[in-house]
Image 1: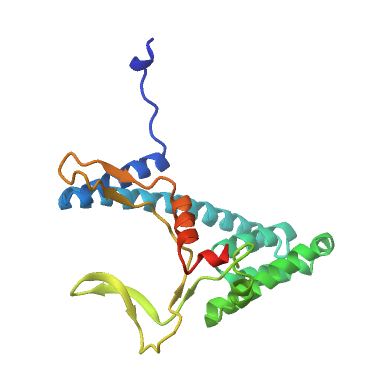
Image 2 (image 1 turned 135 degrees about the vertical axis):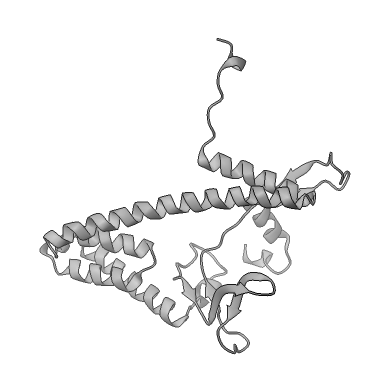
Length: 230
């Protein structure tokens, strides 16, 4: 059988998401609003399915740990496993309780350093998530060298809700003073699409930024305000 006659391999979810994102961006930049909305909707739904699958894995694993702990409430490996899962889900206080209980087990003697590390990590992240007190001074003074600090998820006096005027948005829940920390969460970076300046019509070439990280590093290196931190 000739190669061109063979059936194409189905796209992986990641490949399909990328394809939909590129298509939606192209339609948006060409001002084909309705078609862009439809493709973006497909993209968002697929993203939601992917995230749900991954969260479901953690949820199922958490259920398994709970079942094991119903049989033996101080089972060492189940406590450690449950603590790690809760930590991944940003449930710092519950994770801390698991690690504290696990340390009391005789099996912990060979893993005390690791477990104490988890305990201290949970304490730090729980405090950050509760108070919004983040100290980055050492990292800044070192000119951002080394690994960036691990920070907790934090939500200040804001909430997401729908507005009758402009749809869903982020709203303050009280009067906010200048300089107040509002939100700390993991960043999401996406590539950006632009139309070629040579031709902005239907036949315009869509130029995609393929190496996003390289672009950011290159821009930061050339920037007067950030290149001193190389």
